[in-house]
Image 1: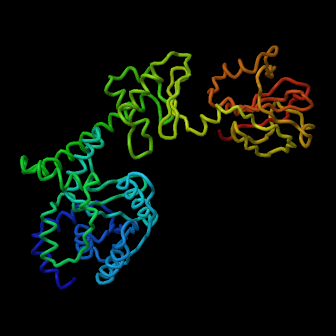
Image 2: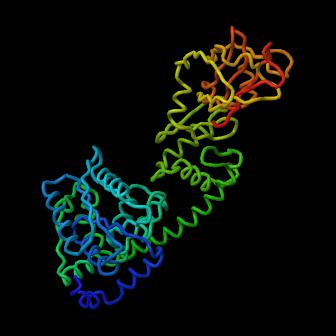
Image 3: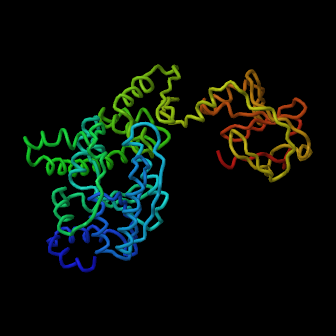
Length: 450
């Protein structure tokens, strides 16, 4: 391909080359690039251009979805082309899960990319302007908001990877022309013509109808995506301010939330429910959170389940609770009774948290260390005489007064010896009970992590 360098410069008219280099300047000098290569026209052009511009910083990966008989032949083709260009390559077979074929194949592909990406590597993909316009249309049809209509970014920095799409402003017509002039070989995927798939239907059934009426539709849609990216960036700045005002990733103060406009409430709830996931909840799910939980009766104990989390209100706060934790609190199965023999400095990993036994100004007698003690879950009706307080009172009331979350109360366990209550392990720490075993310079379990 070195012999094609002069042709490359003429065909490229310097414009695209300049675009590649300008975008590349945003990366560190030692950045390496992993090129996602399907063998199709777009990715093969990308492979050849990257080999010209950054010959010592690239390697390629072909993800074999194993959905077609010719998939292995395409893998061999990509391997052959990479060998000719002196590019290291990976051939990664994957299993595509059941469900929406397009979505599951995309997920399998990105999982493969993540498997092979190195710490200083950027994933490079061959999405072009028509891909961008199609993405915006398809997301519009699905009812996406500003974030969805932002479509794809040329440099997309995510938590787990960075994606570079240097061809995003390039038309498919330009790609076809350059591939022909540079005599680049590629494969044709017949599924790109299967209109059972949404993107293929959009490209082959809808596209020409819209374009016949709006000849510059593709450029207009791409421009809209960039305007939406600006709007999304501004919205995210507002969201961060609102989140700092109202709470954090686990809880929101409903009084402060309701000081915001309805639109900002809805946007904050949507982004908050999304958390670290890729997609926000549907509009209807946010509406359900407001109607069924936020505006429900104070004593209703309403909870909404979405995407492995439960959302519930407690003391005018809205909480986001992991599904496993919430369901455990609803289980009728009690934590088994345990027999313990404790030693000073010992660590205990309990449902309420991790505790460590340490010396204390007021605590339990050292004579209890090494003696068989009993640890059991509360069953209801117990009373506790807290050290330093007058008289015994219901453990349930002590828990309520301590504002221990209802979904954590099932983790509370009572420590005793010979049916004498020594104390209670709670998510807020260890509560020392008044008993004959209390003494000055004793020991207590200290909560070291929840």
